[in-house]
Length: 350
Image 1 (cartoon, rainbow, N blue to C red):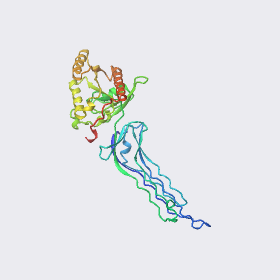
Image 2: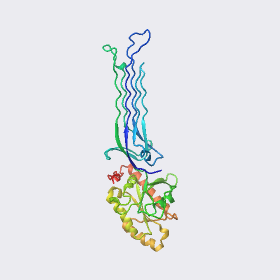
Image 3: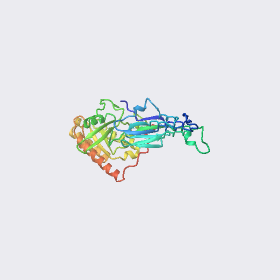
Image 4: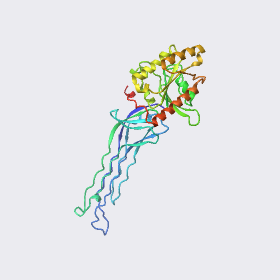
């Protein structure tokens, strides 16, 4: 399934049904009087967060969504039926914006969350509503109220507890495959991952979390180089960043600094997110090389990096348990009201 994380669509609620102009005409009942029914209510437009979806591809090939008009009223005081509401089903984590691309309407970050975007028009009154001692035979009725319409933007920010960062070929996809049931594309060339991948990490009872593999960043990404930083929006909701550094490349310390610089340049608040640093592919390093690289990276990052290998599985579980501990700390901070402020950068306008 193709991954799509933003789209612009047109929505319109339904018009109300028109009221009826009718008079009762039966044998032996002269001057039966008005009996026109009211029109039905037009369909409203709702948006609902649904589990099991992770892309907005359903809105790629259909951009116009219109609710139906309410049924018109009829004689014998028969009211028209209300039109069925139109429900847009989107992945959990979808944000709905006005056409200006800035005004947030709703952030659907909870499964089952449902919000009305446009209200359907009310049905018109039939002529029965207007009868009285002065006007006993009204020959008019009200038309249905018009529905509402507008363009909106849908943006998806995946719900993940941890985010994987690193240069292309840092081994992020291999790490994800080794630690979860996810099966991302793995190859020996850069930019193998073109879209974010999600994996569920299961460390035991009550020790599960979701991790997102973000396509590799490169130097100059904040200015649009490579894949740019578009997919960084998918780690905004994470509580911890796992920064993988390829231990076999020419200058691992420089690689670490490149990613950190891009984070700071594009979103300083995201750069302040709790981070775990890990040296990957240590199965290709001898003991002396491991020790030397650990010392250098500790000096650059301010923390002792984990030594892991996505191929052999060495050190992977220790890293995952450390990430889980950070996630638990983040959840406690949120409950205490100390959660970080939402990011102000906009990766979709790049």
